[in-house]
Length: 440
Ligand SMILES: *[C@@H]1O[C@H](CO)[C@@H](O)[C@H](O)[C@H]1NC(C)=O
Ligand SMILES: *[C@@H]1O[C@H](CO)[C@@H](O)[C@H](O)[C@H]1NC(C)=O
Ligand SMILES: [Zn+2]
Image: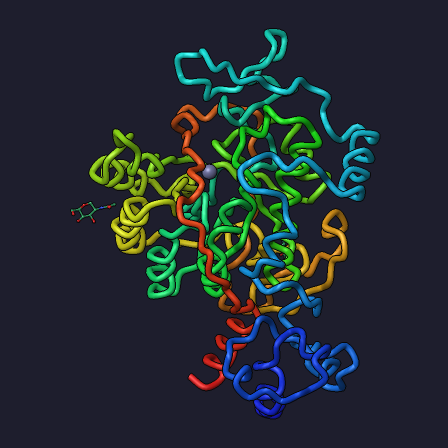
């Protein structure tokens, strides 16, 4: 069965893998020069007889999205590094419905005081609203909302990297690939537009592609509609760039969320909020002057890795070679000290980082509108290679005195925009991986 399927795939490869996505409009004037170019994406005409055959094991939703990195792809999304101004009507309607069923707490939008001693990094509420109370419960103040992820099960360490993809992602990804290690990548939509190559490489590691908003704002300082826009556009970009996958996890920039913004994420898009219980401050390694050093991170990591209860959700970044080095130095110690090092989806979601696909290699259930994604539940990953399931440890509103204050990384729009067209589609990468696994 596997062999005949492989044979069918091999048979299909020449006619499809090298076809441009506009082939169906070009009336088949067999241009063999263009056949050597990398495919923009890899789709048969809708009426092609093998399309139905192939669908069974299709790792995409079958829709022909613009090639990741192309101008057509980039121009379909809001401009970078500003809160997106508009949201589609369907998202607005989902927000309105959630407000009407009283699922979104009606609390004030927090304000950042630019004259504050900390440089305005702590969103504040009117006096009568206690940020540590159950009405607001702001993660910036270390108030934990039940259902949000802060801790890990004993002995388990969730690997996650924020603010990618960037030019520094390559070094991290090479290391993860060499160690057959997956992680959760909380991506900024604006960075994804600049670094499509690193994005596709991340996807090929089969790690979780997760949401870190469009332009890296303090989400509690944004209106309901702006929160929807920050999350929704990032999800839309990820969806359209991964063959239709809809992420399940988001991490608020600076760890800043409250009862209102986490409810918007959950009720409109089904997103689970992920914070952390240890913070390396690795984002500040490359600051001037540096906010921390590799030696300091080494000392913190050494300390954290000594205690297996609770497990660790460590905040790390893929923003500079230094931040990647901090992780690379600690990783062998994580393994030597017998931690079970996993991605968040492996820890909490049975390996399923998406609503409508088990992982980056599995079939995708098409989701026409993001706000309907929760209905497409694709179920757990069946592969026995995935670690066993566990559930988030129940947290009642309590402050975690052990956790350090939320870090304040600067989003640093990547200086160098990759002008070159990246025309390798996720499908091409996945297909390559599939063939490697068949014949390796
Ligand atoms: C800390 O540095 C020492 C000396 O280089 C190294 O042996 C050790 O593995 C490092 N530990 C961590 C957690 O990075
Ligand atoms: C993981 O799988 C178990 C057993 O099938 C199920 O009870 C649990 O709800 C699943 N968890 C998630 C997050 O899907
Ligand atoms: Zn961040």
